[in-house]
Image 1 (cartoon, rainbow, N blue to C red):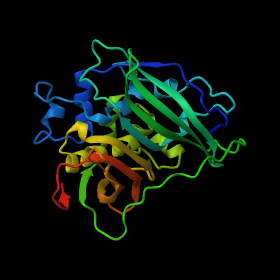
Image 2: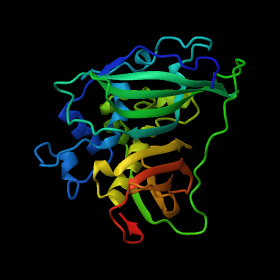
Image 3: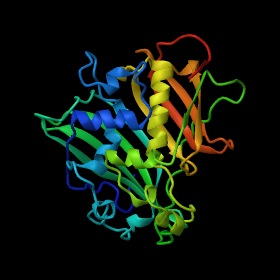
Image 4: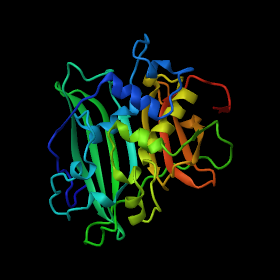
Length: 311
């Protein structure tokens, strides 16, 4: 597919992480010491990185210090499209594909994020930038690929293409979920999650959210996204990182501190792969029943074969 900016590559971004970083991430998305100590204790014999940790690395980079979010988002301009304002950007959709497990720290290796533009679309009220980010080591081995879209609010109508119709993965309408689980956010949920490296002021102080029409602070979309990934891997994959191959969802509505989020998961038994991974679909709703994550889909090697589970 061709269009403005398509194929443009950003300069490679060096990234690094410590064992402390991955412990913090696991804590921030709800891992439990009762039965997931391998994500929370560095001396556990099966100590592992929760697989979606790679999603925070483009924000964190190689720094162990607080990052100026707005400055970090002022990347090289994409040829043929306007310069968008990162002070008015929200996540649209995110998909991750796993190729190799991450080491528990980057010590002794060199890692980079290599990013390329897949499309830039003019939606009228907003512009959408779709980017693929590959996490690679010095040998060129790919560990993960993340495909994400960002909505630049109020920055459309520049004459660009509208973009293709989105692929949708609706959950079954004729049966109850095979698994459900909930997570309760609180006033400090976003402040804890942002320590992973995503220091967008939108999630820390009310003024940016008020200017964007959200009424104040909203929780990171990627917190809800990663918390859903955690719950699905725990409920269906036995909390084993190797049992998650793909994970994706669309950010449909903002989450506010204090919201209770419920994830409903359906196993798609007719969509198994030959190597034992099943397609599952899911939605995440708040206590009012409003969908905050839609188009949820994952490939999971299911190890719990019993019926409906509730965490």
